[in-house]
Length: 382
Image (cartoon, rainbow, N blue to C red):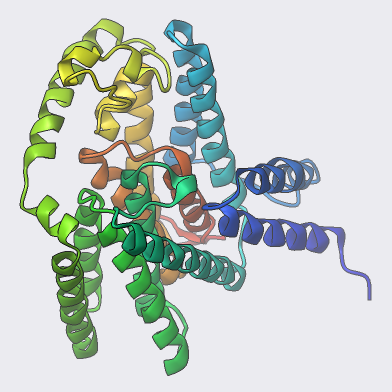
């Protein structure tokens, strides 16, 4: 029996998405090939044949606006190569969101998420060994600075928690495997010594506990999880020292004050993506370069202007509306919520909406956006 063309294209898109999420942490070339040579052509072919459709709402317009304002920010960019790197980053984020939103098979989405968990835990395990061996904070090379590594690991940890609590996994062995992966990613996140993303983990833990408040087993698991996280932080002395210090927060106040004062000078289109470091005088920070505003809202406003800031707010507001109206797919919804909290809550202390963190947020948010949506009249849109 011949497989319909649309079925073949969906299979190709599905396989390439697995390759993409597995390669997020270790291969730039594999990501580029799977996105531009496979997923994007398949997406365009399916659009042309009207085999898929993209639902448009505030969330989608937010992503489009963010892409447009990011491109326009180059008008006043001091360093064009850095600006172009930023545009490449934002373009991939937007493309991944729209491609992911065309997935309708929750089973396949679940498989993609589990491949993400296993790949992340595997890379984190290697990084844990290296961090212990060389007595240094943990980082994953492809993710960049320790901050970005921490953000990514917390996103994945939140998603694993969502899978444990809300997926259709029924066997004890599968649950135990998920818990094991969670402990690896949490341990690795602690060893980055970066604290900001843990705000999102705490908020997400509270939300999921409230959502499953009638489960005694969940309460016991939450208590054990919190105890494990605190023990890991205490045993890894660099993290414990960081928790007892407010020096980095004081440092952020100076950066935020500078960013707020500078926004008014370039409020229309901003200074250009990745160009914050060219506006921030190194003398302010003892000669060190500061690459971003350490706040996703201020960084967006200073680099893309007021329009870029409003598009980011539109993504956040659109996410809330879509999350509340989504029907079914609890595992997918909570994976998306865990990533959104890192972007928008953790973003108070760090610049979060870029690189692999932005791509992972776009993917799981796209999966959520593709779920059936309830309407005000009580009907459900497929």
